[in-house]
Image 1 (cartoon, helix red, strand yellow):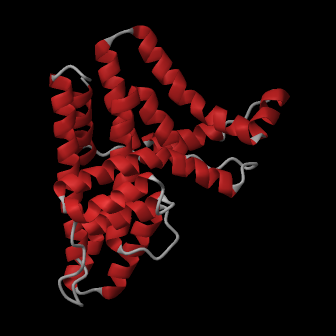
Image 2 (image 1 turned 30 degrees about the vertical axis):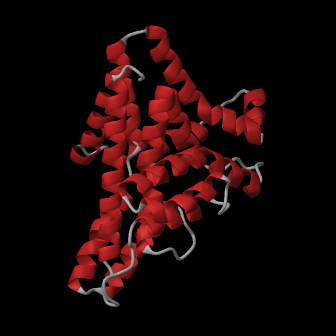
Length: 273
């Protein structure tokens, strides 16, 4: 059932246009901004922990109702919908297409603008190259959602998507918030990069991956990009080539995603899922 939900969700994401107001990010933000007349609840929501708990209520409530029903068909439909709403990233998809088109046309100004849009979609503020941005977007928008659905079902998808997309609680320090983001992305980063070892250069990337398990380097973005660079040659073919690294990265991500879908299929057939 999980395998069918994942395949259907990823197929729908590419063929069906979901309105922005139905993206999980928008739903979470609207929920966070709900105002109530009750003074006690309003004060509780202004607390950092209260804001966090409040934001997670929809995820746990949906998962609880589905589990309480005990209906496999309902579980399948809601699980598929949860994945579809959580992996929506039209800004990144459109920016990537625009990047390739403008780069092939030799429009440097439009290429730079498309790269800026990709950077915005990734949530990165540093001047990372295009292949690093694509890796990070794929990890947070696609792979992590898939992994948490396999491990924890509907609640795993929605809790991760909520923590990924919600606005930082006002009374939560940026350091604590960065630590929380690091924690929810730690496992997906290590699992996804382990796939790079299997579909790329194992001997060259294995040492870096083992170090990343011990948090060296100390952040998920660096671990992800360094292992990918070791597993696959991401250097441009020539000095004026700005698309080959992006295309190579996307090919690596597709092979890696296909590998884990095969793993899920094998585990499902063997009865482990």
